Each structure stands twice: as C-alpha cells, then as structure tokens.
Image (cartoon, rainbow, N blue to C red; front, side):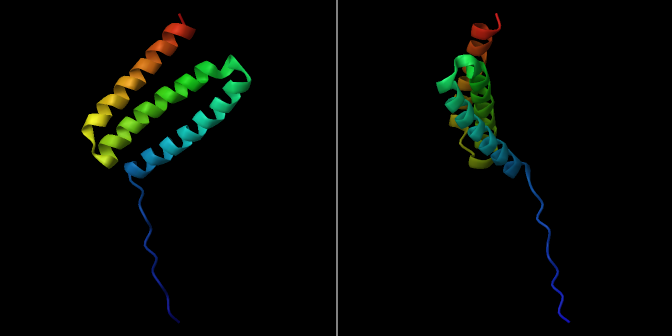
Length: 90
C-alpha cells in the first residue's frame, strides 16, 4: 500500500491582504450598482472605497514593493475618508 504525505500550505499575510482586497472590490461593485438605483448607500460606497485604498496601499508595500504608489493610495484613502466624514457626519 502506497501512502502519500500531503504538505499543508500555510497562508501568509500577503494572501490574506489580497483576499481582503478582492472582497472589497466586490463590495465596491455591489454598492456602486445599488448607488445608481438609490443614493442612500453613497456613504457606504465611499467608506468601502476608503478601505480599499488602504488595503491596496498595504498590499502594494508588502506584495508588489512599489513604494511610490503606496503613498498615493494612502493620500487618496485619507482624502476619501475625510471628505466622507465632513459631508455625511458633520
């Protein structure tokens, strides 16, 4: 009888970051379609856009290693978060 030993793959934080980015992209698409129909979900769309910018900055630094784009993603994420807070909370 031949038995085969299967190695278990350990997941790293890079793969989890990419999974979070994929989920947030799907949420942006869903909230984008809902926002076309009704404007009530516009703050949720902006919040998810802000989160995806920060996730893209994290993945860019850890996985792609393009440091100049990381700062661009962080600046855009902060801009979207601040404008969303100013427009819808205050």
